[in-house]
Every structure is written in structure tokens, then in C-alpha cells.
Length: 300
Ligand SMILES: Nc1ncnc2c1ncn2[C@@H]1O[C@H](COP(=O)(O)OP(=O)(O)OP(=O)(O)O)[C@@H](O)[C@H]1O
Image (cartoon, rainbow, N blue to C red; front, side, top):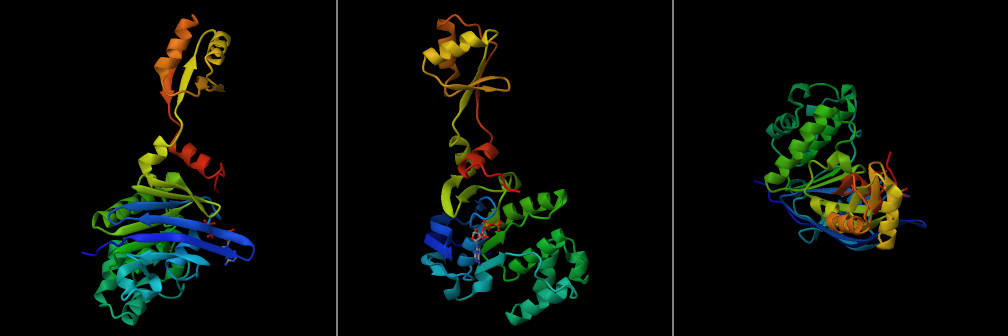
């Protein structure tokens, strides 16, 4: 069984010319869990992953696996499996042929090729030319390549891009399974909704900076709760709230009051003699919390 390793980014900074792509980024990624690495397009995710894999040199800081930078790993292929781009396979060659070349070059048994192709659901398409593959099939081939050395760490850049609903369902189960076996799984995405159902932890960046770190549930608790309140006499309700120092904004089903306790809002209305038609607590959705953190930039 492969053992997961702790990924540590420590004060990593990278600038391209005058543009700072990644700024003083620090976080850890734990084994046995799926971690979503989220941020809008251009927020620095790919640059960070490329630094982790030794493909880009940081200006300062380190990105390591159990304290060791990628270039110093004694057995990189059996430590880390990475899928950064889906389209870099030669269209004229078959999936099996592609992976055989890598397997031979790295001293892995040839039998591993069909094992990984089967694992990602490409067993029946192993002898098909990659040129005829859909984007989703190329994503799966990228995953198969990442799994060749049976690594303890998986680093996947936007693996859900291009998958159809069935493929999305499959990859969610796949990521969970990989983590359940003890692997460290780091998955980037620009859409929270895409990974929400498969991640345990979140690392969110915007403009190259860390803006949120913690379990998925922490994003929810990070969101300011609101009390939805309404009255047949909305004007009187508004006056009562203002008099009590509670700010509010009009919402779809009433006034959205900046308060945590519906009981408190109800009491204010009661003492002002205002009848209520609606009174409940509301939390903003995860997507709203995510958008608020990344500066409201809605990714395309
Ligand atoms: N080789 C490079 N030369 C110059 N600028 C670069 C280079 N690579 C990335 N950048 C810039 O760094 C910033 C971060 O880009 P990066 O690709 O890491 O973001 P991302 O979050 O992965 O976005 P996307 O999801 O669109 O790939 C962007 O402003 C990008 O234009």
C-alpha cells in the first residue's frame, strides 16, 4: 500500500517580470484526505503546482514532500504522480503504447500498464489511438500515467475539466478511494461546485495569496450568518431594526438582517409591536462564501 506524504508550501513566492504570480504562500496538505486547491483563473494554482513538481523555480520559499523538494526525491515516480495537462499525448499512438514507453524508461513492469488503464476505466480503449480520445478520456489517460509508479501522492491540475457527468461522478469516487488508501491527494479547480462533493480540505488562493485554509466545513462557518425577517408592515419592521442598531438589506423573501440569533430579532419586533410573517436563520451558500473570499470574481 502506498504511503501518503505531507506536502508543505513554505513562504513560496514567484514573479514573472513585474507580475507576482504567487505571493508568500504557505500551507500543508495531509495524507489520507482529498485537498481542493481552489482559486479563479490566473490566481496562481498552476504556477504553484509547477513549483511543487520542480518545473518552475520559486524566487523564494520551498515546496516539499515530507520535507524533501521534488528534485531530491530518491524515487520520484513512486512518490508523486502528477497530471498537469491533458492534451500532451501524441495523437498517433495508442494509450497502451504511451504508457509502455514510460514504464520501460522507469523500470516498472509492463503489466502495470494495463493495470492502471483498467483502474481509470480505459481498459477497453487501451489499443485505440489517443487522437480519437475525447477530452475526458485524455484526462483519464493523464491519471493512468500519474498512477504508473503507484505513488503515495497525487497532484492533479483541474482533473474534472472536460469530463461528462458520468466521468465527474467516477472521478469523485476515484479521488475518495485514492485518499482512503492513505494517499495525499491535491486537486486544483477554479470552481468550488466542481470539487465540493469530493474534498475534505480546502486551500483557496486569490491573486497568488492564500485567502482560506481548512476543512470544507470551515468555509461554511466562515460565512456570516444572516436572519431573514419579514412583516406585513415592512416599514415598521425596518424602523424597529434600525432603532435596535441592526443593519439589513432587502432580500428575496424578506429583510436580510446582519444578526446571528433569530430570537433576538424576534424580540426586537415583539417589543416594537411589529407582527412577523417570516423569521429564520440563513447561511450563505458555499459558492457565495468562496466568491466572497476570492473577491467576487466569478470564474469562467
Ligand atoms: N511563464 C509565465 N510567464 C509569465 N507569466 C506567467 C507565466 N505563467 C503564469 N504566469 C502568470 O501568472 C499568473 C498565475 O497564473 P497561473 O497559470 O498559475 O494561474 P492559475 O490559477 O493556474 O490559472 P488557470 O486556472 O487559468 O491556469 C497569471 O497572471 C499568469 O498570466
